[in-house]
Image (cartoon, rainbow over all chains, first blue to last red; front, top):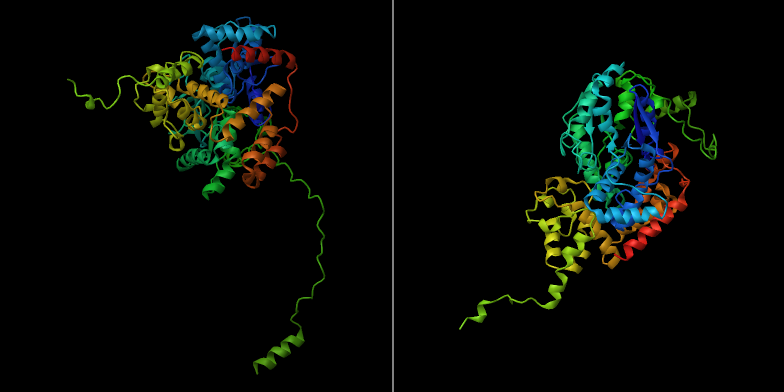
Length: 337
Length: 200
């Protein structure tokens, strides 16, 4: 078994539940043992860094300190979310690069009885661990339902391959890790040119028109390549492309229907796990086409909520429609004559 | 005698400009890590790689030149860093390894402190996000979204209803915030961090 510490991040419990569910479902078969850090806090996303330096890094470093205590230098710290992964890696890196920052952050941590020695943890993204530690061989062994004929667009977004402080990825702008993983599952992987372009990030909240164009570009390109689904490694990318796809369609007058799934969901499908245990059905742009093409029975759709007030079966009384009786026939004959 | 009229630019700049030439240093020193901001060679690779460049008042290259020229007010009023999506394309392409994305974060915090931002949408979003985190130790999407959209995008709400209802009915948004157990510890850490930041 490979033991790791897990920093799930806020969205894994809410908007990216499908990612967490599917991760839990695939962990056992591939021998991935994840221990969640006790009482972790939000990493601050990209927002806290723009408000105030020391508090932002102290917020991130509390997680590093808790993780280092639990790890004893034995386990790597794994984050499935891109923003969390980058923030944790960034704090560790900059506290080393700039000792003054390390000192300030540790002074703040001391107020809570904690400390963190920069460099004492390896911070890694989930995809990195699955491809390089678990390995493609183990993945292939677990495939019982190859994703044959399923056309997938591998989409990584920004913060996993960039800025890549520890040189973990094959390339900063065109890495192949997700492609080879999906190929190992038997999928038909398209050479997706925008695989590390931006999903819009927080622009959906502050400059929606810019975000819609970035989303449109990604979805339109996947659609031109006749992808059945786009596959992401990041809760933010999934949220922007899935939840804002409707608003983007509305804005441009387009009618795209591109399901956005997490790579762990496709791994689970290929491993023969039931779709309902992999968070299928939680996406807003339905991924039924993916399940249908593989001949997998989709989980029952959540029944629509019953209307609050039952509608009256009959409306107001209205005149009976004219029936063509014998009298009408006679009348018509007379008119004809 | 030398022809004075040939000197269109005075050799000695006025004292105000000299004082503000520390702006570049100030930004660099307030940035996490070693920013390498002073190494910029004005090549423009950053702006050419930027997905938001079209809506920026100044490309990152222009902004860095303004910092170097000590144009404090103009630089802090620019929308450039508020439009940055943190995609790090410029960072990995910069031939001088300037930590561009981190410089953008620094400029955000300086603009908020000097109250020089022109559009409050992005600063408000960041502030509300941080307030939620400082209250609960976790992000709280529905609280954040309702405060933010009601203030800045009330007209978008109609288009967003199906999405919001979908997120709620699929339990992808929680109506109640989740609070971490040791909130006292986090508060103590953040309080001390803010004190340290203030004496900087």
